[in-house]
Image 1 (cartoon, rainbow, N blue to C red):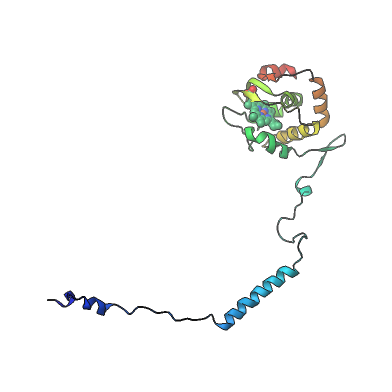
Image 2 (cartoon, protein in one colour):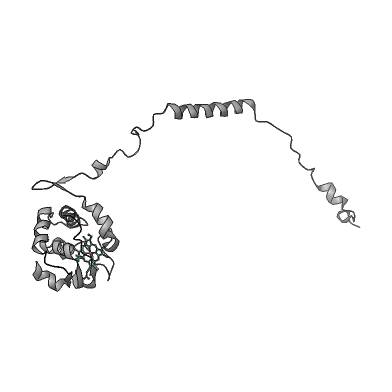
Length: 201
Ligand code: HEC
């Protein structure tokens, strides 16, 4: 019989290490003191730190710096068009102004956006239903009317889309929106596509 094959298993028992045992070892006193001191200092620091004041860290810009009112010729200020665009237009025309291929036409480099300001104002005031060609592609969808927006808001959002994404068209004033709103007030339905818009302006 070989040595490793003892039937009573004593060979295996003999090979194993003794079970480890654990004695109680408290944290060293200086560590306890240190932790206690740190906790007290932390509490004291929170207590003495003034709250409710402007932090000297982080983004120092205020809402005013982020959204400076833009004075326009003839008095008044322009509403932040970017904000309106993000809230009302970006869902369809996208933040990039590129729209969604085949569904929502682009506003970037669109002839309707950078073209005649009256036409653009009419589009925003009354919406479009039917075929409209934008940058050589025909779209057949529905663009909502935005009559509920104020003259200043419409001027703001149109000025924004005319100056964003490489577009370089002149701003549109609230005065223009007011005039066009008055001039087209008889209209109750959206424009029937691009064909009706061109002569309408
Ligand atoms: C529900 C989706 C939707 C929303 C929201 C929307 N549009 Fe449109 N827009 C369209 C569609 C669809 C067309 C094309 C209409 C057609 O095919 O008859 C269009 C066309 C246009 C056009 C003319 C075509 C072009 O690409 O230049 C302009 C300008 C425009 N939209 C501006 C805006 C602005 C500014 C807003 C926000 C105030 C806005 N749209 C919000 C869907 C939308």
